[in-house]
Length: 264
Image 1 (cartoon, rainbow, N blue to C red):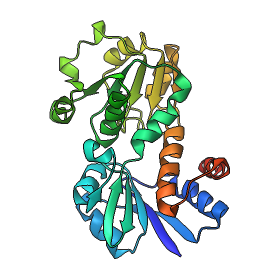
Image 2: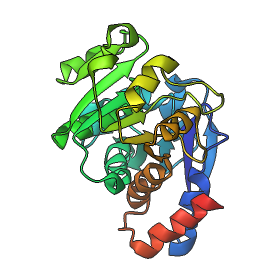
Image 3: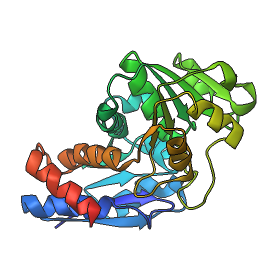
């Protein structure tokens, strides 16, 4: 039996195992996928190899260190400098980022989006902002501090700290929360006044956190934004990882099995 996992801290909330295992079961693929609570991201490659995993997903806060430790990085992940999928291939740890295409698929229901504000500057924010840029969508990144903004500026993406952002004169179609605010608490990703001003002028709000209406989404809804949590992003990035794990194309029946697994 092949072994797969998701590395994260925290990881107890993850629904990736039930989604991936549902896909394996539908395909009769002899594999099992589990949670792996990893406190020290510096050990991620070592643990991946030591436990004989054939593949893994990586969630916060280890996506950037996982990128640095991989033997080979493929696709848009090279530019993002953050990965969420490991594959063991010819005794090499090969890394991918399926967050980026998964996010694009998840926001298709919003229609024609022209300008996006991404809250946060971690690995997920990098994936989202770069894939939006590739689609010629105007994207701005907003983070609490300045110390993580250099990556975005080096890639031609406008990026601001809270104190430098002129929120009263900016208008966006879509606001995306890529931070962990609201995952295990009732916090907002930015100061409330700033967020209220932005959401009062936007049409759509997306939170990468899934399975709950976060304070961010609740506030967005109060300003009549169409809201969406991260379930579809999780599903579609998971489907892309599943295809890498199984070396097969996921048809609509497999995708539906994985979606039902998420809802269990």
